[in-house]
Length: 340
Ligand code: PMV
Image (cartoon, rainbow, N blue to C red; front, side):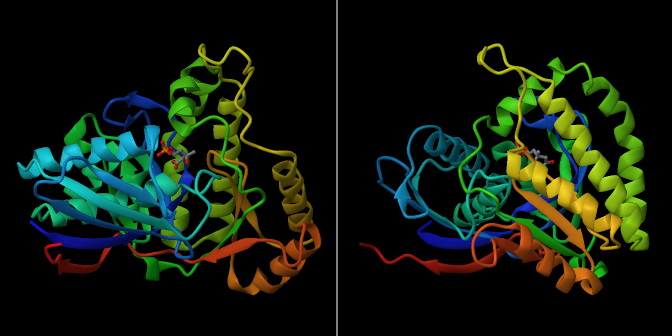
């Protein structure tokens, strides 16, 4: 005990989306999904278990966590305590270098980093699959931030068979992913609520039927580095998920006719991407559960894409992050904590 461990993880961008749970308590998804880690964003988290401390202390981006954000971290620490057979409370400090809850999956990097830091600090040595399974219980898509590069989350049939595994390492394809931050406000409907609502969409079953083939097309395009095939499949897949969100509802929010993660700026950028492509600029979009847009492009188009973005984004130079496929979760440092 008294080992303070700092771990870091990248968020991931879903190329084939996870939308809907088969088991909500364990985050076992209905469908398999596939993602790429985003090198330009990260969460860094330190954990130390302190004998004699009365309660868990959790700081996120410099502020004491409260409410559901605090409870979610404590529930995850409880999972680690159960695995390690310990009872000590912890001090957790977590920092994101990108806006949380805005369509970049901060919960993915957060629970991947927390899983590694907390399990090591508790004296456990989990392998990649065990760590991915643990991270999944904190936030589903976190299981995909554990391995590096391009990662498939195998839906599986139960706790032990639902985890993220690498399809190709980051070095396989130096794909450029531009995350355009259109708005830093958090989304109104959480992804947890979105997963719950999915089944109410008349299009949900239709989407599920197409997914095994979509996953295969994306996997093959990725392995063959076929940019056009990848971009087309990824873009159509994103729209298919959002059609489901827009046609699903939640009994507890009667004011909600459908979940619109897209803002007017999101739609404007979708139209811009289609117009750019028509003019020969090969760029494709995808959107997670939020209003921000991720653009896939290859290096030969980068300068032109950035010029175009500067024309359409508000403010000097607009706001975007440029990622490459990123590594899996890693230890930043581990040091003995001195007694206070
Ligand atoms: O892991 P969650 O519950 O935040 O769900 C993520 C959902 C999407 O980002 C929309 C899709 C995905 O596969 O990451």
